[in-house]
Length: 334
Ligand SMILES: Cc1cc2nc3c(=O)[nH]c(=O)nc-3n(C[C@H](O)[C@H](O)[C@H](O)COP(=O)(O)O)c2cc1C
Image 1 (spheres, rainbow, N blue to C red):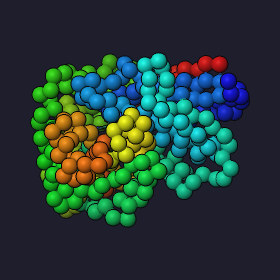
Image 2 (cartoon, helix red, strand yellow; image 1 turned 60 degrees about the vertical axis):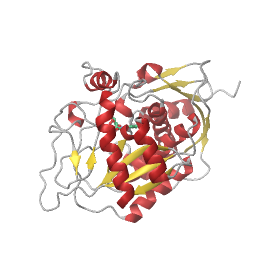
Image 3 (cartoon, rainbow, N blue to C red; image 1 turned 180 degrees about the vertical axis):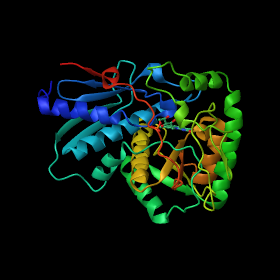
């Protein structure tokens, strides 16, 4: 038994979990469950929110939980707390994915913490065409720097590498819908009952035909209400593709890669970039292997592709996607 967590620490952890609700997750399934104990906070997978026909290997679930864990760290850091995080493989006996203990930080928030905390509410997945404005290499370098503390490496896919990823994306977009159960699962997460507070709402889905930007084909979603920018001279999507890789495919490495993904997305948002995380191409074994061997090298597994671009300045702001209330994801013991 540890020392009981004092009230201020419990309140800080509760507040940070509330901020972590904004983390991205595949199909906005929000596959996390938090348990606040007497002297620690535990993160578990919510098994009812897995996507067995889309995310067969369970990597998407771990990436979403890792992103929530990183959001939690950022929220705590911005409030002057240091988080000690112990990652561990999930266990059928109920062992959590991560256990978090906090103590007052000895120095002020690190260089990224405040800007990332400020980006949490501004980060959204943007599936629209980006502008023709180029993404500076220095900005991309910062994204890779943000990923490294969590074992993530961001590989930029230019030229021939981009062509390999784009071809693989196109093939995955054709093949995955033929997999048993995939379409029904997509349908379930895009047609939620009122008050469900999850899934991908119409406001985040394009109102036109399947997106096809330059050489890129994104995951198809049922038609929504999100409008493409009207265009103009600057309308040619100049987004960059990048591939995030993990140390290896162990659950702890993929969970940490989810933290890296969150760090990248928040840093990109802070820099004014729009982002689309894309895992479809890595969910079809053949296209995943092609990206792995021909773009990043066999030694590091790719876990997420990112589309990064400058939003069209005339595009209206995106509507935040829903999140379940705190009481649904956090339980308290002790
Ligand atoms: C691991 C992971 C995989 C994702 N894969 C895709 C994808 O293949 N295509 C896509 O359009 N969005 C993808 N997304 C974005 C989610 O749909 C999005 O995060 C979720 O709907 C919540 O919306 P928000 O990011 O705007 O908060 C993915 C997100 C995560 C974290």
